[in-house]
Image (cartoon, rainbow, N blue to C red; front, side, top):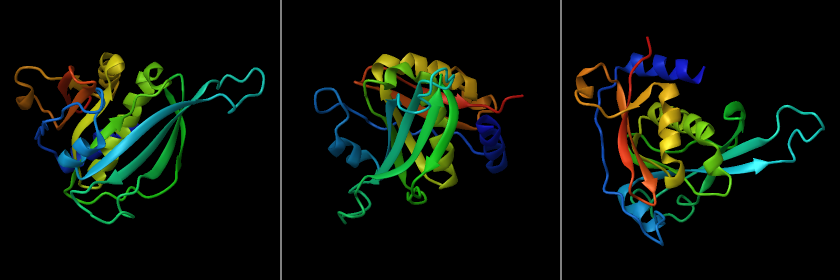
Length: 210
């Protein structure tokens, strides 16, 4: 369903490819520092993974374990100087089992402004590296939601130890790595994905599935 909605939306607005590769760099012992994120972006969407063993804990349940991807966001000092406006707000909880989407709980509106630019930052947690399929699903979902806001996604930042796995899983949603002549092959949009710590990065392109 998510893939179908993405294809319909991209086809309807006939997006052109306009890669935006920002000069992302490491800070704070290999992590992307908040001050650096502020320089390059108007908003940041965070994704944090956590195992929820207490959910569906009844014996014999086939829905265990459940992984929660909590999505939060904030505006940066590029667009506001108001402390209240800059607070990180929880947007939604996404629930997965074996990488499959099980549900979501919307907690607030995604209050990012039109024509502003920002990044999706999958933060390193003890549980995130085991969930590349869930992370890929969340990235596509959040890309679509930022596009519906007419906002510009400059980069997706993922932990380096799961970079290849996330790239592979994004292929299930119609995204593929940069290839020669891609711009003339019916591509509808692109996404720049980079690792944290840095060292791995590439563009991924979306093409409507036949």
